[in-house]
Image (cartoon, rainbow, N blue to C red):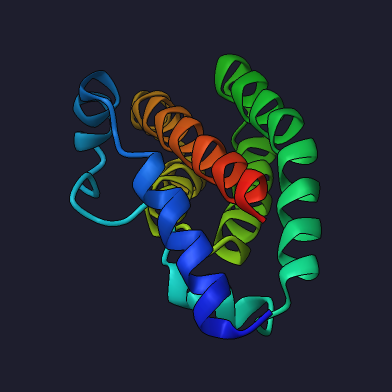
Length: 147
């Protein structure tokens, strides 16, 4: 599929997945509420304009993300800074591949809090990350449905 068509699919999925008011309020705390959930142009570049590769990457991400969030949640609850840092770093890489700047910023904030052993900040950062992941997952599901 041509780049313009794949870009149009992603942009249409983004349009379908507009933020609901409650999620906007939750994610506004992270300071990225005005940015895009997915940078469509970067995502097209990541997959080298290959529709099948995009679909495969999204499906892998959607299959994997919940277990990553569960590991992060457990590390936050237990106050395990090394496990939290490692899990947040891994998720940061995954959302970076999905060209998701809001989720990337939230994961980076969580990773930084874990590195500094600032658990009240880590708890807040995790709440923001969960909200951003909800938006990202909805958007990615919309993209897969349109491919």
